[in-house]
Length: 188
Ligand SMILES: Nc1nc2c(c(=O)[nH]1)N(C=O)[C@@H](CNc1ccc(C(=O)N[C@@H](CCC(=O)O)C(=O)O)cc1)CN2
Ligand SMILES: Nc1ncnc2c1ncn2[C@@H]1O[C@H](COP(=O)(O)OP(=O)(O)OP(=O)(O)O)[C@@H](O)[C@H]1O
Image (cartoon, rainbow, N blue to C red; front, side, top):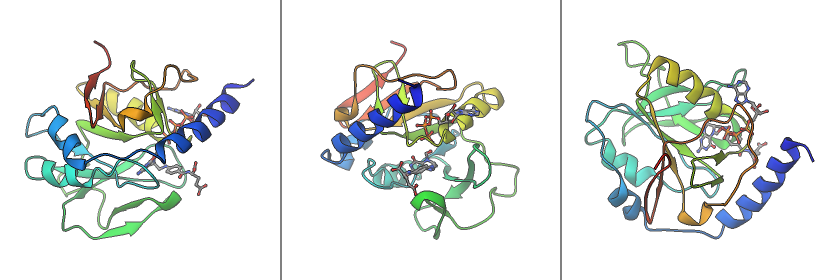
């Protein structure tokens, strides 16, 4: 069976599992590792049954600049726009939403130091299954070149962990997974 078919099957399984999970948003805030205040943090705006990170983003916005991804229609690399809790949002592709406004704050492109990554399933080693667009793999690969200190933090319910995922050469493993039960450091 091809890797694409195996990923597609794993996606259907993972969607059915995730649809039954829930947690208290405060548990994600409690388990957040803490980052230097100068770190620009890229969040995401939840769709479908993804963990609702909006309470965490609101809290992090008190100490960090927050950006959210804008999904392009013609390439794989996400761009980012500044977000604040008062921000006006507009619709993008695939049911996504992003802040209204220019892609930068006027002082050059706002590149994240920390990227919160939505996912369908993850492994203890940081392997990740997403919706299959390839957006986060392409974006993390490009960002790691420009920001060698880049950290990626998958956001998931603990119940989204699986033993093994189909893996391709372009898949970029996550550095951390934040769940309602704690923080997983994948290289430990
Ligand atoms: N909240 C959130 N934002 C995100 C992502 C994400 O996974 N979650 N992305 C991660 O890459 C990027 C957007 N890419 C996406 C690609 C596919 C689907 C999606 O829902 N696919 C459906 C089919 C929907 C359709 O065809 O219209 C599916 O697979 O069920 C969503 C986002 C950037 N922003
Ligand atoms: N850096 C890249 N450059 C070009 N193609 C890529 C890159 N990364 C991934 N792809 C391709 O994109 C397709 C989808 O990748 P994959 O199945 O890993 O998506 P995903 O991680 O589930 O999706 P997403 O990141 O959008 O949530 C694959 O065919 C993969 O080969």
